Image 1: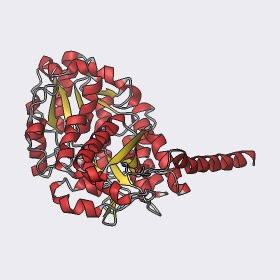
Image 2 (image 1 turned 135 degrees about the vertical axis):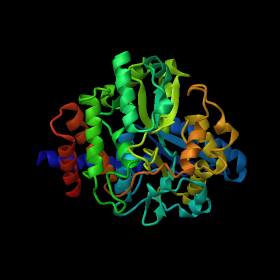
Image 3 (image 1 turned 45 degrees about the vertical axis):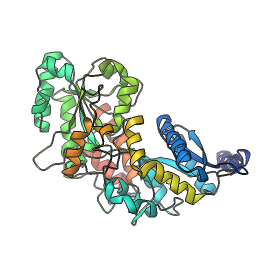
Image 4 (image 1 turned 180 degrees about the vertical axis):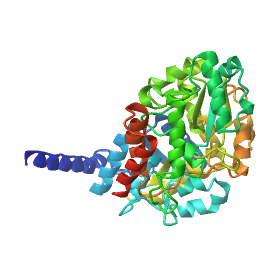
Length: 435
């Protein structure tokens, strides 16, 4: 009884806080007399905030009669999405624009959707984008979020390690080739070829999507325990425990503080991650600058995709905004224009979702000194033109599916080894189907 009362009091206190916060701040979307319109934007990543502030400065230069004062609020990922959920439940306190992570996006497409459809700003330029990146932020034909990147998954090879081991990365075309190279690295250098996230979902998720598998089907049904998924997880299990060409990522994930020095110091030879991870190399791993070559994913068999789009955030306008049309226009300016998509690469090293007028521009085709002094986008253009960058299926259970893979499947299979890959996936799929 006491716990119930306390819990109710805490909920009331949070709701009251959300109600008074915009009042204390002067109200979201307020406009000073003759001054700019204030828009608030929530994000969970500081570098995303830098990108949006750059867009706001460019907007104000180009539209002097529609000046905005953009307030960017950066909050840790889970906390920010919890705050957004509470604001939607309270009916007050949400920002004008919010950068929603794909891990949580489907949660906000359930029931009473409090995000504004964006089709009117998307449709005029849709053909210039990688279409699948709109699909993951859509429901019933309505687009509710604008993509930040393609997230094409690639392999980052440490060429110093490859050369020392006598491995020709250009000869790695299939996962069998990758494994053979891994055994050579293991035997020659005494280090693993790659890592597996034991508290997250890579490279498992991209490796199943490239092969035609996924957590959900196109209709949103649970497919986590499909034959393809089981076979891929069994292969990864063999990398770690039988072939010993992989180890668990320090800290369990590629964004853990312990992981960056492990790669920076040459702890392994190749990383399977999306292109948005380039920004992490630049920020946290200076000692391997110039040594990292970027190549497409190997394939399971001929006809498989050589990449897939993984991860992302969708920038959405909330229905609580006092200036919905202005927020939509700025969101479109920041995410859909040619110049802003070039800025995605310039500021964050994200592969822009708009290809037309962007991917083949001189700015993006310049050799990158950090990444083996090669022009990364020549490879990405080739993949896109061949339709080789599929994205995962979306659905109301996507956030739950990612959570159960990160927190349960990866732990069961790679940490405590309490279940076989098939047992782990079947148990997790059954849990999802009960939701």
